[in-house]
Amino acid sequence: MKIVYSIKKNTKLYLGVLIASAGLLGACSQSNSKQLDNDSGEGKAQPEVVGMKMSGSIIQKLNPDYSISLPAELHPYEQVSVHAKVSGFIKQIFANRGDYVKKGQLLATLEAPELEQQYLRDKSNEQKANNDYVYAKQAYDRLVDASNTAGAVAEIELDRAKSAMESAYSSFKAAQAQTQHSSQLKEYLRIVAPFDGIITQRNVSVGALSGASSEIPIFLIAQNDKLRLTLSVPEKHASSVQPASVASFTVSSQPGEEFDAKLSRSSGMLSQGDRSLTLEFDVDNSDGVLQGGDYAQVKLQLKRRKASLWVDNNSILKSQSGTYLLTVKEGELKKVAIHEGVRLDSITEVFGNFANGDTIILKPSEEMNEGPIDLANLTF
Image (tube, rainbow, N blue to C red):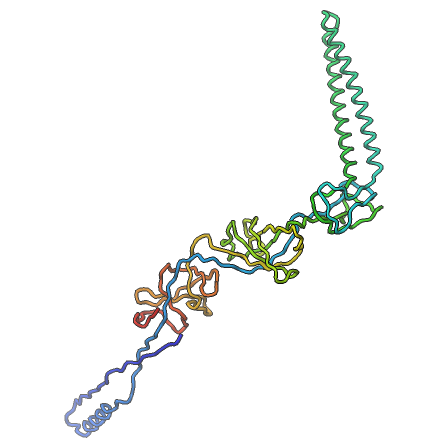
């Protein structure tokens, strides 16, 4: 801002000296001579008042659309490490790295002879318990038929038979459950795909011992036909995320290509670590162009949930003591502290003790002190 100074001339200052003693004529003549010298000194200028030409602007209540650029990462929509649930030796492997597999497809089998023996033992116990139950039930049914003849069967005998039948039935159900458990353990010797995806790792060979306690998984499977684009939005912009926010992104593996995505889910709260909001965008990758693990640069479209106050970027005064606006109200210039929000190309969101429509100074400087101003010097 160019500062123009205008100067106003003061009136002359006159000094009169009164001679108290009429008898001192020589002194009087000397004083009169000095008075004449002072009266003739018109070339000495006095201090002058400075006026500044200033440009003004208005604080506006706006709700602009804007975008920010953020780093992000593409992840497989689903990814899982496949471990054996029971201990056993790898007997056969039917899939390899890079293979596309379907949900439920057999990937490998294990062998564990002790599980087969346990199953056979439990199956035998189940059969025996079933036979005991059938025998007890038949005995009870015969007593019930005989009890139709008065005095043929004592009541206590009938109760004992019923109790024996119920006990046998309970034993049979327990044995049956144990057999089902053993059968399920045998089923765990078959390793199947949990969902449609691609084998990204195969870490074992035939003959290797594997189990639930193994740190290294047998396979790593990822769903790559659909990806999750994950990014973190800084706290300043978190309240600008809308339920239908859209984004476009690029990846270094596909130079010149731009991809679109729509917001699918939000963490709903700021992380305690970096005070950011995590967003996820579902990305269709049925053509296989993108890869899980790619880094992306995202352009995210945002908008505040309600309008806020914005000012021209050139109206903000930054100094060592803080950030301010110079406001003009009722002919008074006042310095008001502000907190900056979103900053765009030409305007900045501001928060402070001011209101929509307030007048502010463009291109303020620290030399502009608070106090009265001549509104005639303020232009818009």
